[in-house]
Length: 278
Image (cartoon, rainbow, N blue to C red; front, side, top):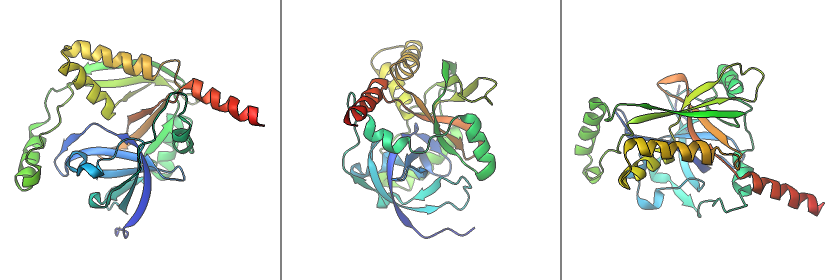
């Protein structure tokens, strides 16, 4: 397969996963978003924390970036970004109280019905990104994980930065010593069992370490993370969707890479306002 020429795309960033050291790419943040037509796109890899400040985009901010198709990544939504070409366009679209409508009009242009539909799409055309609304979010499961990154990853990272002196001051991100999985059911007749899916959202990892830095124990921080993600973000006041994607090294494995949770009240208000205008 030959790599296509560079093209420039406008992308609304919707997903950033927690940074991990990489043997091949130094450090990885899986970044995804939607185009102006609502198509999902993955920008991979991006060494986000190494970007100059003016290129460090935020979630729900439009960027323009030069991209190429990957040689070795068959996932159809994957593009290789040219980090030096990134331009941030305006300020992020804020989730003002009572007004999620601007985000919704792009994010929910092409939602899927369920994980079952996404599994079928993957078999058909290598779909590897999606967004859908789970029918029932039953629990957030927390299990212990290795407290440190694998030594082979850290050694590669150390070697890389010895040759990139401008990056020597950047230390690896702290590893979250727990794994978090949502247990949920889909709104699909084909869904005959609960799904258990890992969460890799940047915001979850940041929240965990913020709580620890404030003095909470690891156990207490985990419970507060659970309260925030299960009972607040996925609570009855929000119309919660999951952003999901596959892992390059394990292409049949799907993980939750982010959450989208417009307020139910704001959607009702918007519908009422449109009705009153008719």
